[in-house]
Image (cartoon, rainbow, N blue to C red):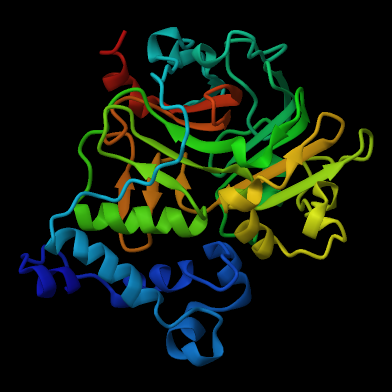
Length: 368
């Protein structure tokens, strides 16, 4: 209805305004919390009916919608932020190199190593085959050694009881955790995460929906650089600013990443974090700023833990739920899987794992 009024477009469907406004209200907050965090502390009703008692800024709805509408009215291209990252040719593992779909233990999903990005990127035991879902597994690259854990709600898990305990009572439907040690000292400002694709995206949703999704991603991952209309689309953000939990421990004192709750502890970074009194929201604000990030580094002695979770992308259906609409990702990604990756600004990879769905295979089979 808003789009129809402002842009003179024909309204093809009637939407429930509460479903449209609720997610938009909840993404711009004083604490940069996730939607799940908002729901744990406030109901949607209280957010919509009692804004004066909520921590959500009143300009959330208007600012996000106005940004979305301006892209339509002005017909201006989407803003592309300069990240300073080496944007050399992206190489990704293609479908022809995967195990036969009938052999996927978690069918219709497959988690696997993205082999082309690093010659020495290895997963002991599982090699080039299917990696576990729901339980940690070892991996190593030229820059990092440690363990990875990926939990996907609705997927066949190697630890169904653990997944049920983790997801019960929570909005989140996706969790990924990395724990381990860097092999060389690196600046916090140089460690990125996100998604990258070697081919253009196809069947993109309407520009208004795309712009709103971009704004949404920017709120969940502060400082995210989203580039869609290019031959090699990518979404990149500072790992330190987008992780829900970061902690550093001396070897032997690190937590079990398969536990239900991981706690924050960035005191090892020193500076303002030294006393351990910086909240997660404050850490995100500080470490999503590339200039401030340069004051901190990841050393080679500490065991670092990075946890990321979200409630937007459903791997079991391979769709993105924006609250007011769902986007089927398989038809947009052009036969390419999403990833869980860590990457340096100079283009070197710390880790890179692909999450395939068999929906991708028909289109992916045409690329060899």
